Length: 112
Image 1: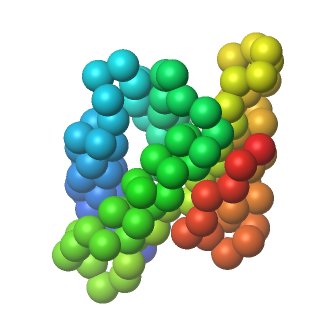
Image 2: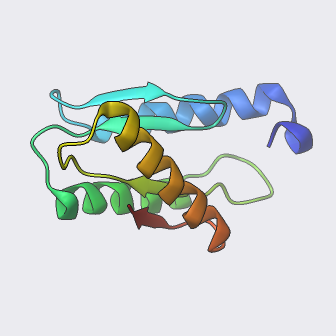
C-alpha cells in the first residue's frame, strides 16, 4: 500500500486496523505489530475453532470498513494454536499459514 498511496495513508490504515483489533480482543488477549503491515494476536484460553472464528470475524470486519480508498483493504491470516511448541515455532508455523493465505489469493485465514 505504501507504493500506491504513500506512507501517511498506510499509517492511517494500520491505525484503524489496530484499533479494531484492540476493540474486539478480550482484556486477556495480546495484540502487537509484528512487521510493516503484520500483526500478531495471542488469544488466551482459546482453541483452534475459537481462534479461527476470531480471525474470520476480524477479516470480515476489515473487509467492510471504509478506509476512504478507491480499493478495498483486506486481511490474510495464519492461525496456530498451542500444541507444546516453542513461541518461535508457533510464530514460524503461523507465518507459513499466512503466506499460504496470500498464495491462495489473499483475504482468507489459514490454520497451520
